[in-house]
Length: 447
Image (cartoon, rainbow, N blue to C red):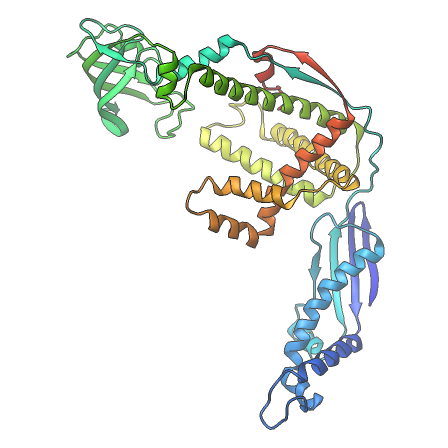
């Protein structure tokens, strides 16, 4: 095997690799010797088929297999001998000339390969013990727990029919028919719709126009659909609803006690409080971890600055940009609506892509250097979580991941990243800081 470097530019490499025809011929003959003891040909006893006849019968098909195997092994050997790690799967090009391809299969021509790839950047993970993070902590108050329980109770609050005008908090049963430019639209009608006035469940302005209405009243409610309304064909449109009020009901008393908890399948109100508190604490713990993780990543981003594999960066940016364009299209917006330009947006998202790729490489290097592994049990658990979203199709989901290594890598990556974050938190100087719920749940502007 002869290897010649034809390009070395930044992280880009290109090699020309030549495998001599005589080397391929030797592999072919060795393979045919092994094969002749396995084949059965009319006119020959087992194992007695002449190699000349074997080559004539099987030579080209066996050589095709050898070429494929040789190309795969040669690219791996070339990287190992050069002490390089490819950032992505190398691109391998061979002759596309049919005449030359046939000559290679006939053992009359050397096999020439052009191997193009990008190498992983060379950087060292330094001392990580100087990492410092501030962990936000929120104490779950009893009042917040009861507030959440009362929200649950609102879904089962009793209502009693009443005479007179509807007030905020009352429930109206009605029939309605929505129209745009005099034409009814899909999804804009109901014969027995129920609406609690003040709940904000309907289009802004709809509920306000029903306050003061009584059973039997007929009215026309005029509203404008929000510009970001989910149904794109209705977003920003003016509409009229022909409404007939069928019943007005006043809210009854909501009693939150042990009987209420039993109605939810629990033995007591205390048990319900315990569960709700646990759910809120889990939410806050997750939010706190995200804040802490962001601090760690920010510090790592400041620590390391190195060149990135161009293709890796291009693919990361393409994924982000495709999502940006999709979101804008679905929202019916333009870059101008977001008070920016496409050029400025591209520059901003290129910075995000650069940060993601660099931090991904840093976290991977920290994980590899410290032998952080994702176990089979962790992978099975993650796949099971995915499968549970498709009841009855669990077997198919597991088979899908087994047959798609790239998708399996997508399952592994976030698990690996969180384990590396756990490792960094063990090294870091972590201090706790009590904050309000609002401070904890507030999204960072840069995110």
